[in-house]
Length: 549
Ligand code: BGC
Image (cartoon, rainbow, N blue to C red):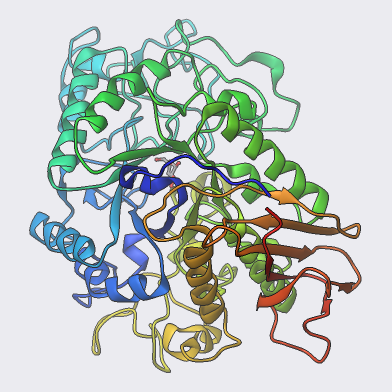
């Protein structure tokens, strides 16, 4: 097994970090209004420290009308009153740093809210004005300009254009309440550079860049045309074809301007792109010493439950990491996707697979992004009443992301299961009664629980793959295995010549013998009579054995 010998630097912390995504409105409610807030995050920091994560990524908490859960920002330099105040933010980050936790905040540069003062000014200014030029206003097509300027579709369904009373149209790749900015306008660029500095000055350790591939649109705003197969929406081409509104080469100039800003602050301030590109090679272009530090690897999230599918994604990601010289990221769930317990089959089957996937992911070199509640094995809530759903996409497409955003169960026997203070209001989305048994309190101390599995895995990962002071992730060495099984060595010897770790995942239909992989360390399923020599289907185990050098 080979290990990276590069010296590790504290500012490279992100290279092997486990980052926990906090969807702020659903994490913990301190003031009892049924909506999570920054004081709630602050109060639960010890839980996250004990869980064993290195950093938190907070979804947007800025001033917003909340049409898209805060991804519609009206003021990039203030906290929405629903979530607290800047003072609450400062207190939260101070405590986080004192506990050794870093803070990554979400930045939403592709679009503002329609309640942003710039958009208000654009609406009250005339066509062709400087105010309109900060967004993408155009005349329509057709005899009276009654048709949208081109054929672009909103990701949330319907046309990507909305007409204003004077007859012009403006572009919104998402909801009409999220007008797209014109990133060829110098004021837009200057504004966001200043916003980055505002949060860097407040101590943030990094940024998650929303729709990082979207800011530049092809010159002339050309039609997508007939490249979209009949019956499909343009968004279904995401990640498979280049659309004129995504992944344009010029977008990289923006990041080349941002990187020196990040580098001018001490302590390793980083940025991770939420970007979709046609190929892994094009995605890799977002990452590098003069652009962003990382990009989410959504291929891992999209992999189907088979050894071949995961093997291919892992090999591709590792090859790309070698090219860009930065370790990749691993993600199984986030606030936009159905929770992986449910994607993998729901119920007991989905949970078994989710637990196995967690051990696979946590054994891979690079950084890991956990989505709040995955450590509890939460499934998607599929039966939310329609009238409670808040995702703006729901009314336009019938699809909704609310089921992965249900507030976390912390404790107790009655909803909202400790999400808010005693006597507080109901949570903004109701948790199902089955979540009583999935709360943090219910799982704590039960060695068979998913929470304790994550705690143990995070501790072992830290001990074995990142010895004290080291941030360089180890490497993967594939080992011989039965069909349907993935087996690899990972991490680095804790001390030269001592032990190495092995991860084995059985994605096949039959139990497999694993007696020769080493001494069992951790198992995704509660120990059975055949443990440790047999690995049941849909499970994973970690072993330790003398290093082979
Ligand atoms: C975010 C979504 C959001 C969209 C528009 C996405 O990439 O993750 O939650 O709706 O950007 O800002």
